[in-house]
Image (cartoon, rainbow, N blue to C red):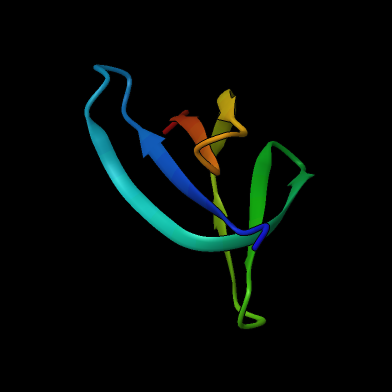
Length: 64
């Protein structure tokens, strides 16, 4: 499977939330729109921090 787990971190490094089964990430006007395997989506105000391909994990830094 090619889905990823997305972790959103606060400025202090603490984990804010985790979003599972993400298949697509689209940047849009300062936000990132995350689409999941089931057709749902969520928009977060964050920047890309790290992509761990072997772990299927994407780490975002919250900008709010």
